[in-house]
Length: 137
Image 1 (cartoon, helix red, strand yellow):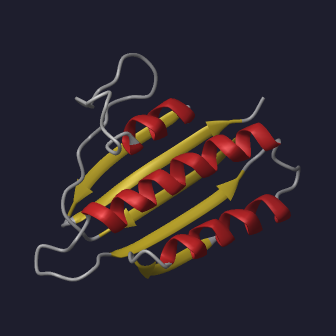
Image 2 (spheres, one colour):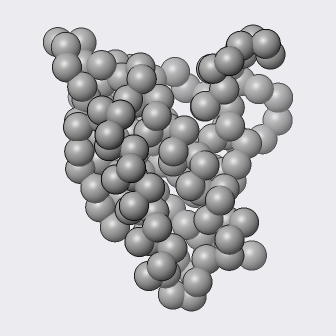
Image 3 (spheres, helix red, strand yellow):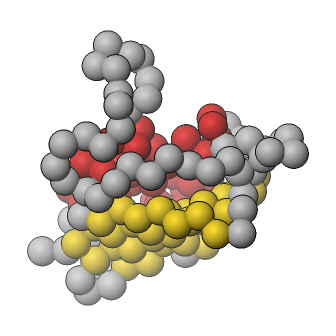
């Protein structure tokens, strides 16, 4: 499924609606724990684009979300034309970003890393491109 939208706070409802449609239409169905892991990561990344991704020229970035389900995995890409995003490093292991344990925010990328089986970031032509994967059992 595909969504292209300006990354403003109201767009997050549309992100959740797209994910609901993916889970509803997936064949074979995706188990609820995998849905939660993938949805959490997508929501955190999309919220980061909304909060931190303003275009260098001003205004909200344009965000493109694609999600698809295969027999082996749930896959997605999230692209935006905002500021360069920090690379959180590979999934698993120690936190890749310096996060203050007492801070009220700043954990979104680490949460995405923790919930996914694979997370990669590419920066090309002024665009961030996140690739996400949760493996199916």
